[in-house]
Length: 321
Image 1: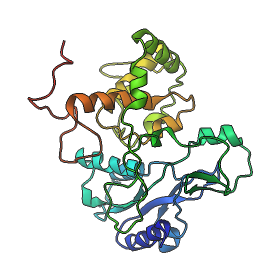
Image 2: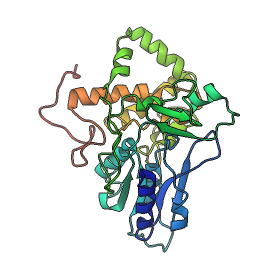
Image 3: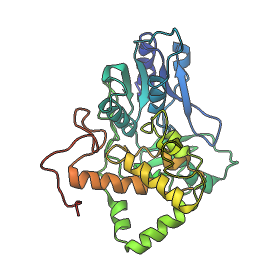
């Protein structure tokens, strides 16, 4: 039995005990799969999984658990089911750590993943209007209509992935995929090698492109506040909503600080950014600092306090001036 067939089999079991199961169905735009909320076995038959199953579906869990109840409505105690790649399943760990929901409120169908495509790379190589029918995994990488691709299609988040086989799942029996040796923070280290002035000029150019559409915030399952501090105007107006460089810089650096030690590098912020700002580079730098100074890696241990939610007398103090 293939992993996709196993996924559908398990999802059909879950629809009878869960409020719904979120999975992927074939989309209509640029070969990207989209979310499908399944409530019947017939819905589950539409589930697919492959290199175009890109979105982090845990966002639907956050939206559901954070939804205010209507007047007179009683909470539904049944769990929800989610199809998760390894990087997405790490988000569940963070949400449990932060008490957004209990672990038993979410049933995870963990799917081994060989990596997803980068939609922007695909559009550059094949154009927006193309006649490609299917993108699949082959023994040595992606296959586009059964043929080797014209160029590199692998998403940046997949280059250093350590969890191609999900470490958190409620389903056994999936066929595991090869796990290459992770390269750690290789991309971040090359950025750190730049002179401070060059780094600032780089981000100055990137932040100046921001149109403050907040797509990065809205797509992030860990940006779940009912009201973002950016939207609060009273009693303190921290920043204006203009697209000037100081305001844009404040927004992105503040968001990166809030995600420090929490970001699981699912890549959703960078994927949805219409201005192609390399947000993973900023969040990755924060993740590297959290790991090297406090030995905190996101999505690993739900019982350990978060980076900004606890302290240890043995923490390094090199950051204190």
